[in-house]
Amino acid sequence: MGIAYDADNAEIARTAQLLCQWVELQTGISLQLTPSAKKAAIRLIVSVFSAEKKGKKTASLTDQQLEAYTLRVDKNGVTINARQAVGIFRGAQTLRKSLPTTGPVELPFVTIADEPRFSYRGVHLDCSRHYFSIAVIKQYLDLLALHGCNQFHWHITDDQGWRFEVKALPDLAIKGSVRQQTVIGRNSGLYDGQPYGGYYTQDECREIVVYAAERYINVIPEIDMPGHMQAALHVYPNLGCTGGPYPVWQVWGVSNDVLCGGNPEVLLFIKTVLGELCDVFPSQFIHIGGDECPKVRWKNCAKCQAKIRELGLKDDGHHSLENQLQTYINREVEQFLKSRGRNLIGWDETLEGGLTESAVVMSWRGVNGGIEAARQHHRVIMTPTDYCYIDYYQLKNTWNLPTAIGGYVPVSKVYSFEPLVPDKLTEEDQQFVLGSQVNLWTEYITAPQHLFYMLLPRLDAISEVQWCRPAQKDFDDFMTRLPRMMQLYDRLAVNYCHAVE
Ligand code: ACM
Ligand code: ZN
Image (cartoon, rainbow, N blue to C red; front, side, top):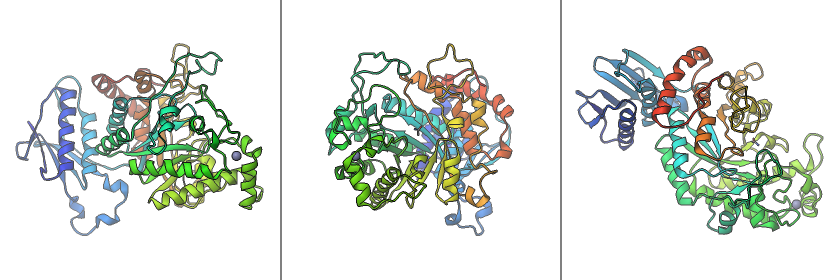
């Protein structure tokens, strides 16, 4: 049996090869790549859909329509048809999810016409609190691809470790990636006494970008600033308000030590880092964090206060002077990113000093930040803690579970999320919600098995939030399909949470 595809199309050839591997792993059936569509069991065909042959231009299609596909099963086998290679890839994932892992492979005759609901379908991973190898990140990306996600938000710097190589500032990764020890549990006051480190070279980052792109996933790197910078301050203490010294942080939480808002060297530092980041990551969106930046140092720093006076910032009753100083930094960064043809994303705290012109807001402290930003006609990604923080517990009874940060976000809660908040946003404002994302912070996650246990099956739930319209969603139906996915996870040898609430 074979997979037929347009041999002149290198992208489709790659998907065909991947599909061969997936089918063999899942069913034991070895398919051959074949140029002969007649005898093939599976056909991958890029063409305009028949209804479009007369008239409609591709240029007028939405991002979601560009990912559309049809999957037909009939007496001739399986045919996946799409406008673009990406649609073929998405359809191939649906085929994978339709195949059993045991017994005969029988598919009902069916025609599926499918496209995603949202253009932004993200999953985040914190690789600062704990470092995960390139091999593990590829496994993570494989799971995102299986679920039709198209954005990987990679959090690669924070107080507890700087994990991105910057060639102009080699000590940043060499020294900033290593903390001398790590607190045990939830800031118990006891330490493990073990140095902990690891960082990604630019070559490794490029390898991840290519691997993700082959799975139609964009990698959005995040350099969190001006807070969450203590690992960088360890290497360059002159960039802090007090001058340090600062250890690479050994505890969890929000550090008061942040980049100085009044030191011009800080902007030079940021631009050096982001310049190299843009060289490595082609993403249209670059995440600059902006969350949890306490202002206690800035309030007491002569340089920060002088900068506030120099900029003529005035208390307007809504935005504090220090929050406006953060917006000044964001504006500088925005201009820099614009010069590189990029756009910034910030966490919802970036609203507090006034949003910069083109900022995309990632709403995490509930959906209110996202609502406010959408009403201001800024683009928004919804990732509220209550529904989307998969570092929280997923089971109610936690007594024998590995330590998590707290909270309770079961599969059913993730599944119930509605990113457009229709009771709060008008139809016009809903257009600014690009989609949603789950976030996986790793303070308490040291091993890959634990990482995948936190991800799965909550990833299954968010993927239906991201892909399906509300009328198509049905939690009971989802639960009937989940055992099949768990069998697939067993076959892929990836860990997951067996209990589902
Ligand atoms: C965040 O969870 N601090 C964005
Ligand atoms: Zn300062």
